Image 1 (cartoon, rainbow, N blue to C red):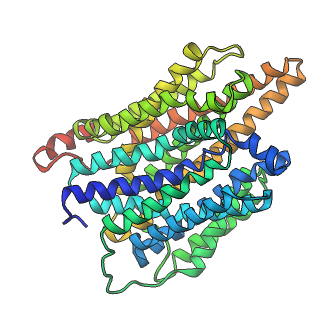
Image 2 (cartoon, helix red, strand yellow):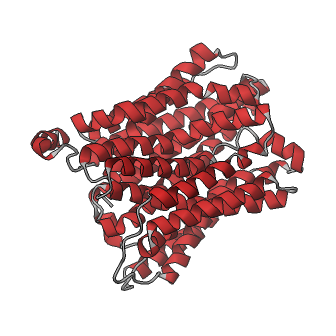
Image 3 (cartoon, helix red, strand yellow):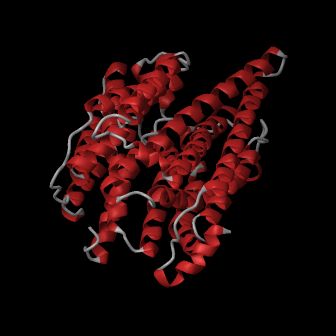
Length: 474
């Protein structure tokens, strides 16, 4: 792939990022619109969560299988198929006449999203071999992964406030068509593989079942199912250690940076997913913001995150290596969440919300690039699709787990305060505060793990390798 012109590579990157942004947006774009969806389609309060959960369930469950299909069938082919599936499902969601059809459409969206996300990172790694170019490209892609949640809340609020909830899905249609047309023109053809191998069907069934069961247990608070998920995962590991052509070669997890990056990704995603969800609820339920106001409140986060991802992160990585920017970015995010944990009932946007928004934007914009570079740096090219799926799976599972745990903490704290006689709004805000504090701990722990255990390869050009080696060893 690297024999393409510079212009062609960057065009391909922008198309890949636009496709992945469309996928990432849909994990958060519905949050602000849920009250309108409930009113129009008659969802019960408990069933309403499945507008989000159906997407997370299929998305998380099929990431690893999609990554492996990319390695066997071609990443370009899988990417295009995922875009088509996602776009068609978006039409079904936007026009859904009933609650049941909307949930089914969201599940199909998750399948298409898994295919796109699982191979996009692999395609980018193949496009950019030069360290400086790869760092810049990862900065762009890092903004998509980290900033997509904030942009989703912003866009969801604007579309719902100005038009209707239907447009949070229908807006994907022209984007999906444009991505499909552009991808066919600018993405390089899949390289011919003399021996494509076969799909490990039993391994695929076991790991997909384990992931889907665990996501279902987490998002629907069915904690007993985690035992079943653990049993399926143990069976998967046992099978992968014996089969000749495993779905996930276990030696991948013996690569230090791959393994450590997964831990960092889980902790970081736990904090980020919870922040987007809980911050939107705080603005709506405590400060009384409308959907449009909530969306606009996330604009500072999106702007700062874009600037740091696109203009700052790659320069820091090339100058200082991967670990220092990673630690600083995650540290800023931890401070942001800690500030939000003291936001009062009668909070002011400028004093109690904006500082946290700015710090989180800066921290996420700086940190995601080095996380992705560390995770993909040790992987052989022919397994980059699988590694991309593993990276996305860690973020997905971390986000789902973090959201479930922190929301449970918030609910328990609110119930405790209510039982002790606190006013309803005070009790609700007290629950949000403890959840934000727990998110701060998760981000700080991610910074510690990354700083203490990552041993990434130098990112500098060959003439600067010795300097980068010393910086990374420090």
